[in-house]
Length: 105
Image 1 (cartoon, rainbow, N blue to C red):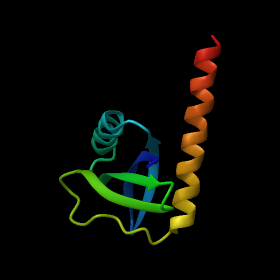
Image 2 (cartoon, one colour):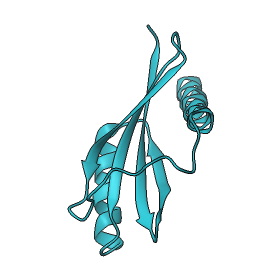
Image 3 (tube, one colour):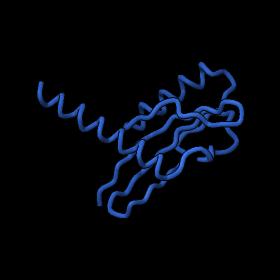
Image 4 (cartoon, helix red, strand yellow):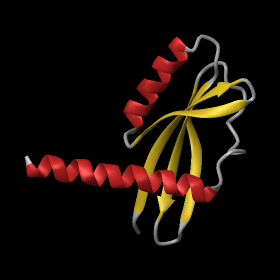
């Protein structure tokens, strides 16, 4: 079973959740979320873990970090599963390209 995992740092601005950053490492994502929470004063911040199962063509999301001000997990009202899957595939492609560049050096 092949799966790909990405971590989205999201910040609530007015009534919408905006993607602040996307990582392939959980520790880096949570550290970035803490920095954003400190910088964004009272804006709620969350980190969503997105796991894409290639064989089943299935995307699963869950919240792994919430700033103290977050009461609810952000809904994906502005992103369809296809859009999120596309963003995840772009992240994977970038990681593969970066990895091949490191091997070439």
